Image 1 (cartoon, rainbow over the protein chains, first blue to last red):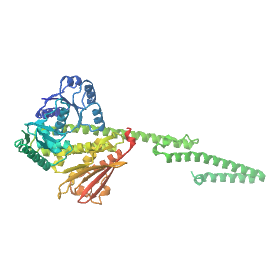
Image 2 (cartoon, rainbow over the protein chains, first blue to last red):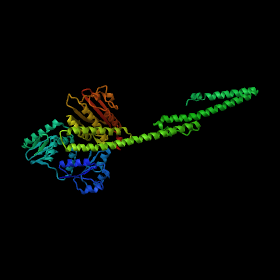
Image 3 (tube, one colour):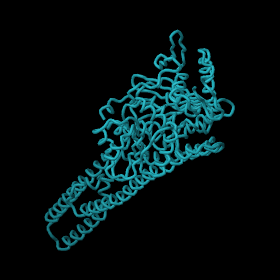
Image 4 (tube, chains in turn yellow, brown):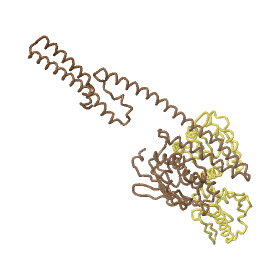
Amino acid sequence: MKKIFIVEDDKSIRDELAKLLKNAGYLTEALTDFKEPTEKILSANADLLLLDINLPELNGEIILKEIRSNSDIPIIMVTSRTSETDEVLSLSYGADDYITKPYDPTILLLRISAVLKRYSKSASNLTYRGWSVNPAKGALISENNEIILTKNEMIIFQLLLDRQGEIVTRDALMTALWDNDEFINDNALTVNISRLRAKLSDAGHNDALETRKKQGYILK
Amino acid sequence: MKITDFFKDRVFIYISYSVTFGIIFTFMNAFHTDLQLNLITGIIFLLMAAINEAWEFFRKNGFYNDLRDKLENLDRKYLISEMIDEPSFAEGKLFRDVICEAGKSMCENIAVYRKNSSEFREFIEMWVHEIKLPVSSLLLMTHNNRSEISENFLEQLMRIDNYTDTVLYYARSENAEKDYLINETSLKRVVSNIALKHREMLLMHNVTLRTAGLDLNVLTDGKWLEFILGQLISNSIKFFSSERGPEITISAKEFPDKTILNYKDNGIGIPDSDIPYIFNKSFTGENGRNGARSTGMGLYIVKNLCDRLGHTISVDSQKNVFTEFEIIFPKNDFYKFN
């Protein structure tokens, strides 16, 4: 399990954030005493750092700079200040992503998994039941067959594959699609999913995509 | 200073000159002085008076003409007190002292208001930043404890967030301080961010969002542009027609000297009579009165922000068919070196 370190001075947000991340299957640790933050963050040995810019003792941007000079841990900056300067500064100090409060929790989770994926040395799960997944080509390829997926179907399939065996909500699928500039509506999502299901059963996986009523979908 | 005005101003002095001259002449006549002596005295008297008057006219005329020229050339006329030369005559000195004193007092007064306004703005910025914390907290709580009413909670939270942003950008747009950062910004990224932010609302109203040709960079402040588009989107959502499926199309086109961002919805449109006023402060119009609640501030702030960023925004609409906004980003090499 990946460990995420939270640096956030608002206790209520910190607790809810930890809960959100736990529900999403991450380990969490949070900074509660803001003295000498850099040492504490580095010694926690986390896989990703969520760093607030406005902190009681120090400015988040300074912490970011200090950490970057010692470690290349993935960092997502979180702030309630909406200013282009902060964003440009954070990214130039080496943050991997930048999110403004109030953030959509689904988007936050999506960004976290995107950043983690970018950093993970081993390529993510790119095979499914003996089919190899080729996102660039938009295809599932087996020894003697090929399923061509549209961009939308591929986004949906990849998200389901990342969480194979778990329920993925329609909201999460929708967020992933919108995050990839595919601004589709509810009906279009239903159509895309039934097409994906048809393509998978054409390839002999009748039971691959299961619908859980009012909850979401599972890729088996 | 006109010479006739000068003479008019000194009529009383001339009368007293004449009276004095008359009396002296009468006396001289009474003492039977020589006519030639009288004449010489008269000429000397007149000559001296003329020299006096000329001297008086030229130094005053010089001072006031100079003052008026300076005033005309001054951009900020209230700074005239800094420009007045030391006059050579007493009433001029008095005049200068009064102007300087008044100017100084006004500057002090303005400084008080400037300080108040900037403190107020700082407070607003801080407050907006603070209010976002409980909103974030509530969003997370709603997400962590899903129930049937989560969607309603989310909708209301988004409304709060939208209103607070309006306050923040109003404060920013009204203030003289330069707190934006203009750089090469991808339109795709801006539209993507704003679509994600309004995703729940757009999906809730089943809006079809189309984009085209957004693979362009423009010179703008990304955050400000996000706010501008956010306002357009929330207006569209308020004023969709119940007769057809709601649609929003955002597209961009590049020209040699500018890039145009086009935003179009198929909502109820704006009546022709309202079009010239929609960017005015507090203007709500027919739509605002009849339908959804409207403060008349959103588009006013949008216009202000566009002006400050150097973009041009214009509107076109046909009642019951569409509303279309166009934002023009001029290509200006000057900003690139910022």
